[in-house]
Image 1: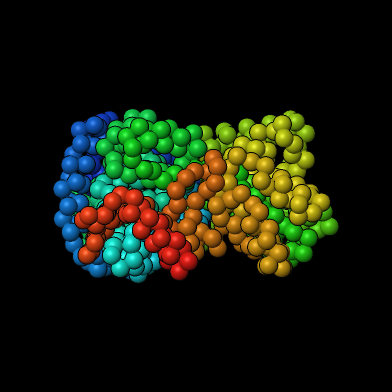
Image 2: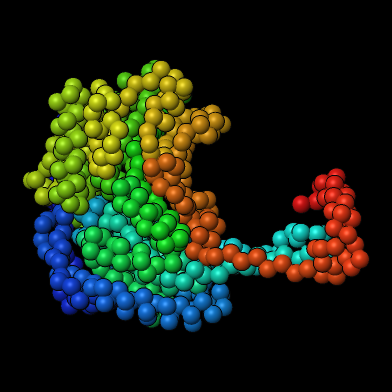
Length: 526
């Protein structure tokens, strides 16, 4: 295969001055526990000694957040949305610095870092414009027409905990926090240590946009150290990460009778139907499989290709994979960056080696590239994968995809659905009506037709989330803000009670109400 040579400037240069890094780190409600050192994945160079939060720090964060939330929720909604309209403009205007931070902390290519900037801008614009309609009080049909008036009112839950991962640290920390804040909540964020500076930069920018101090708190620490303490203090938990951890969070939230929203793992399928434009499908598969080095919950790890175009697709896909430029320099000149952690490199290597030992064929890739950086791994394409291999069913979460030949749509649908996960899927066809019919039969929270993940993910007016082991709850759309509220029904009874009138027997009342109910049904009243 091609050597995937590094770009001339493929070693990223940390662009922030030490005092700037320190200023960002000091924004966290932390310092009561020993600090941890973070490193740049692409180079291994140190980034920051990051302060960690103690239980006392958590207590202080929640105390300040609860006090600030009372004043924040009392503000007119128009004032709250105005903050995030300004955030939209600021993040687009000041994107250069956050792109550098994102790349340095994650190792991803700059084009993939920009996706996160765009995500925050899109969500800021969307919720700033739609929150009023979603949150306004609504009249509902009362128990008895004309006599009962019912009204639905939304109240902020209080303090929302957002536990965000390292793979998309800007999008998944800010775009989940902002609808919670617009709804009138305070937020306590716990980003992954590896990418904490990204969240802290966004925290600074939000205050620059006018978010009052203390409404958004950031605490730092490993999940095993402070995760349970966070859930014990939360009014709602929003988590993105592994299925195993998500189950534990759901159990803890259930014990406290608080709600949670969980986006978890995926083993996402891409279906290339027999009428697909093969060239477009092959190019789309590059984005679908290798964005952020495959460290994307929505990433495609399985490709099912119709028999009649299988060989043609494989040829075009491999040719494109082998031209990919690897690197994580702070410019738009790489197609894929580094993995983020040594554990990711180890896990991916284990999946590929296990597959090779059990008879899989490596069509391209299949090796680490320490010559480029400590955690680089080549984009890898496998075939002859069987159910006994780790890569067949387990989430790899890296730049590895397996290709399967299928007889027809029925075969592709059956194999695509043969998983405990159900997060994302992709279908390629020239017949979009056919594509929609196939999509409706897939067990996935999102299905993209003639795109890998960006079409559904970027359609923020529609809900996003998973089936099965891929989680519960939704982000985006009206559900993405309403989940951060408690709903109250206020019903007013007028003129007559819902009870027998004076002097009326219970039997007469029951007969009268029976007639009324029959009449309401015939008139098709709700």
